[in-house]
Image (cartoon, rainbow, N blue to C red; front, side, top):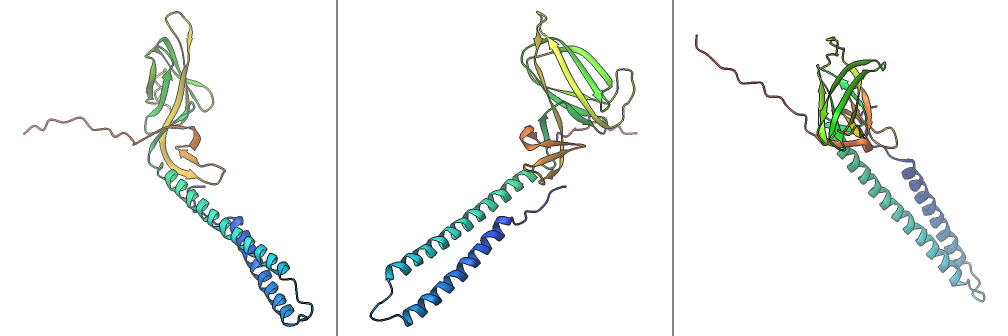
Length: 231
């Protein structure tokens, strides 16, 4: 389900029913009290403390319902603001922890972060079936970086668009393993509010909002300048 509007909750209808009930009960109470006062025995009048306490109780309940109504409206406004903020992710490029990215228009991208200098790094890309389609050896500097694959396999095959996973393992000069974390990169096309938390649609896969590590504008490429020559 894509972006959806905010609908009223069951709590709202429950509060409305409670307010209606308390109002009816209060009207009934006043009617009975008025009848009792009109028909009371002058020699044995009603105890004013009893109905005064009941009036106070009715007033307290009514105030509590109004407080709940105010809190409910405040919560709804907060939810609307949160959804508006999440919708602003559409059209933005996001990075999310994970290995999967989508090959589209001849490009699939990942971000990585090496905990230290990697002297011997091995990059492996697999397709959705788990088959290795591309490998590369090299070195990595410590810290964040990016890796872009053009969809051409190690055997020169141009692979179709779809989901691919990236794994980077490496060691330092001493041969000790170095941790390299990866994050998928893609453009948000929709937001799903049907669950307990918003989920972003990035290409063909879903990303929980809590897994997003970076948000940026989609990079634009500028074509190289051309020399105009007169015939």
